[in-house]
Length: 164
Image 1: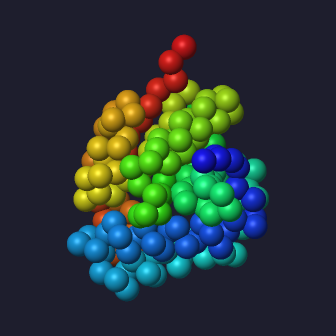
Image 2: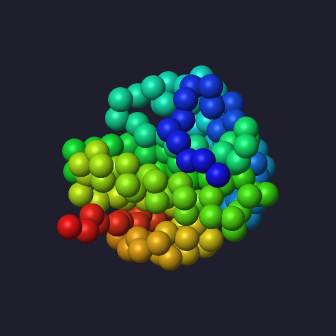
């Protein structure tokens, strides 16, 4: 497995991973139309290319052979990195892909000079919450919300401080 910074040529593959993940992970939280709309709004190829090229964005992909099987997306702030999205294609879970992406993202964000990394996850995503907790992230908020296809959904914030 290779984890690397995304290139604009990866946008279509990232969109495929996002759509597959939303269908698999959120059937009881989001209806099919909301999941499809959100995936289209957040991960359409044009938007992804613009995000990848943003100076303060960091998008990583994990690939096996020529296939992108996961990605992570963060923004670099003055003192905090915000890990907004981490997705692994359903057929590639429990193979260390998510861990490799998070480890690299945390390293890259700390290399950018941030003092902490904050990760966001839907409150109903028990698997995602357990994933961050197992990697040392601490729950700091359960009162955030995110807008998905016109509806608000509860979201949790997890934080990992830089160790000096």
